[in-house]
Length: 281
Image 1 (tube, rainbow, N blue to C red):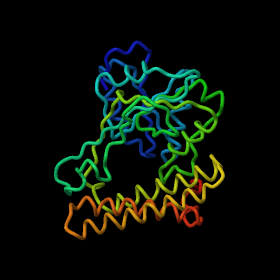
Image 2: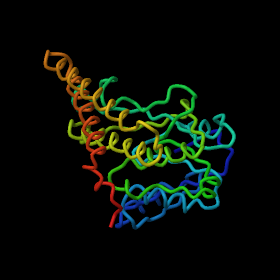
Image 3: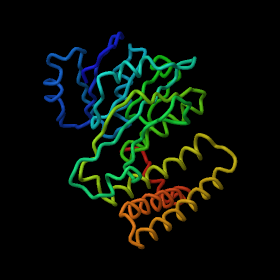
Image 4: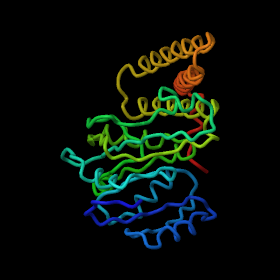
């Protein structure tokens, strides 16, 4: 987190939503000698939505808020680049890029650039429909004025950032890509499995159904989602055939990804997974 070229007053806040406060000692050690002020905040509520909302509350006097995930790290010009990105007026959201790094020791398909762990990199400065919270800047003053919060229904299952930024976009916020503001993330070996790929993409597809149904409410969304699911089924079958014909194992992983997307879409459209988005008790 050593950052150069930053002229803004910066405070680093680590939100720990482990009820045991397991990160407190790590944060205290990290704060020693750090050029920025580093604070620890214990969030007793479980779930990533609660943690993100706690960060919004903690930064009550700030004008801008930047999210970076706990499994990511940034190069030394990341924050400067994110803060200096040309932003349209009014300021809304700036989305940086996330480059995925695959440690050695996992299956060959995990490291394939075309596989399920391909980087979530925005490649050009352009407007986006939504964003992900792993590397993003938000106009916090405007956010407070308009009262947006992360939805607790997604706190345990994920997808809270997709839904949140889709709501902002639908409300007229501008989301701009900043491809040169880069952070990096490792994919640990325990995630390099087909089961994890299935869960991740099933959840992502189901979230998009919620976004289209509850936020965009655009005519014909059911037809578009159903057509998307059918394309995913066809793509999954094609990838499975290529794998069965002796091609690279990455086709098996891609077949899993596309099948999960189709299943997530169709299940969410039928309401089968709706209970997974119930608020935490």
